[in-house]
Length: 431
Image 1 (cartoon, rainbow, N blue to C red):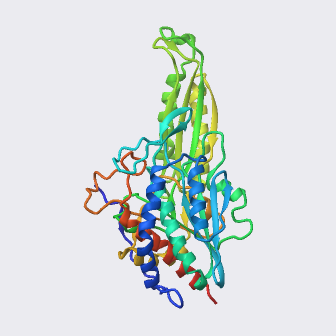
Image 2 (cartoon, one colour):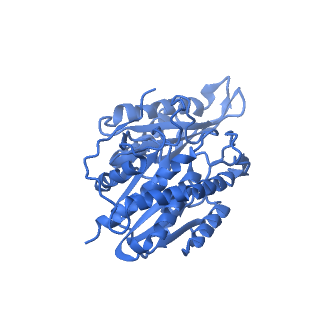
Image 3 (tube, rainbow, N blue to C red):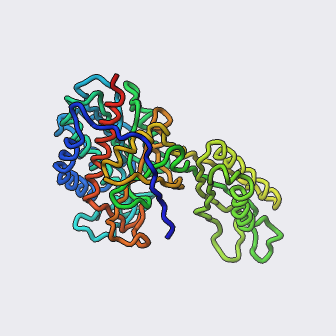
């Protein structure tokens, strides 16, 4: 199996966590809070909720924050929670963010705290599981919040904690996620000078970290094409216009956009068709077919071109056969782009947290709406490996698998990573 990551040589000097809060303080505090982090993770894992339905999750998060002496703000973007740790010394505001929602997946891990939850998704009764590690994300951020809040008297600045719903995407017809939090005034009163986020999985060695500057995750958009023909008997296709044949030609034609019309040396792009619906009987040519798919891009100009090219290709192919189309484009999250200077800065903190060199990672064609924060202020997103080192890399269940799990000892590294980054950054801004 081809390796997804390679070691990234860190040329930046290792900023020492010093003057009031030292590295040993954070190391010891992370070890002390680890049992609580595991307990939180198991509660979240056993009680997952779908996007925009994280009611019990957000209530539990708010309860934990209040127990720390914080004053959480709730109900932003439906179920989002925020809180601010006010440092005892003057300085900027920095933010750390986690997602909260689970997926419509029936869990098959066999864990003693496995989810048995069920819910409604697109009108169907489904199992619900934290199959993407958001349970671990919340718990690690809460662990860091505990450490930073206990040390707040020595913090030269403040920390915004962001617990975001609907990262996996809000239900059809609803708003949600990072963009809705921002629209509802997440940064209205104070804009953080940096935002940090983390995700587990994505082919990184267990307990170690990976990231890259610039575009790291793809923009994700949805297209739907309705091909309108003329219904007729399957034995007499010349009496109608066959939208099924036209749809087949469109699906093939879309692949020439990325292979023949975009500069593959500039950035990768993907057009995938995931659904074709049409027809009710073997000998009846229907009057319409629906095609739905996803577009993944990294370059903003290429993204706009592909949107235009999909509609043009579909419309002209349909016209050549006497058919018509309706085209719908639903914009998703933009490409996640790490601030280059901030990426270089956080590497020593990640190395300290894991005891290993940071890995460089190739751009990932999955998407993350953490990208929305980077449109407002400098932001960095990084990955942490979740599987034990003794598990065969070729058989590790991936994110969104019903067998996905988090090796809990590694969460201590995630807690340290958030804590080191925040303290390093705030100290670097002291004048």
